[in-house]
Image (cartoon, rainbow, N blue to C red):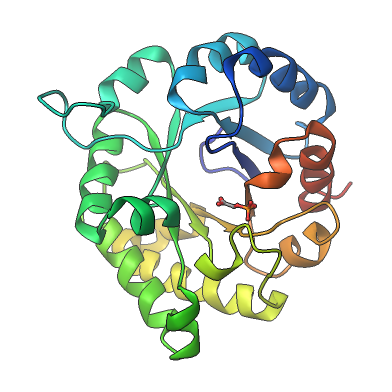
Length: 254
Ligand code: PGA
């Protein structure tokens, strides 16, 4: 469900906000409400909730992914989770390079590149997050930052026919209620597309580029129907099935 396709994609990033006991009902509500004929959808719970989410989503079109992982196959990395562990569970995708990982946990462009290569190696679809900080925006370097992050992340191209997903998430828009103008989102997505074309050639047109950062049921139609936007990575507004469904409707109108 998270392969390159004509359909838009919405991904709910639950961060550290959903406990295991809530997972079955939340997954059931999402499965019930989302218009899967018109949109691909997935949720990314915290590691201890992955089994519950996979079980609840089994036999449904809802995908389940992780929020991060290590790049090595195994080893002495206390607290880390290996890509093969996720793949063996049945996890299909993994969010990599989220700005909270980059800024709060020191993840570098090189780390993200290693993780992307590991994801491809293990058959996981990487959802790679890129985006400028407030200071970088102020300095007029947003597009240079985005280009650098995309090029670094895909220094290894991955096996032919395997596609990542990219999420443009301006750091200053995450969890703040502030968003770029639709035209700014389109411009950023064009930068990402150019950088992807350098790496993937013409196949880059099959890579979905999501927007993320303070997407709500109220602003989704305006932000997500901007040219070049193939869906959304949603944080806070994905914690309620109703708002997540409204966002999916906005991204995939009848
Ligand atoms: P938000 O988070 O929708 O709560 O701003 C988005 C994200 O961090 O992916």
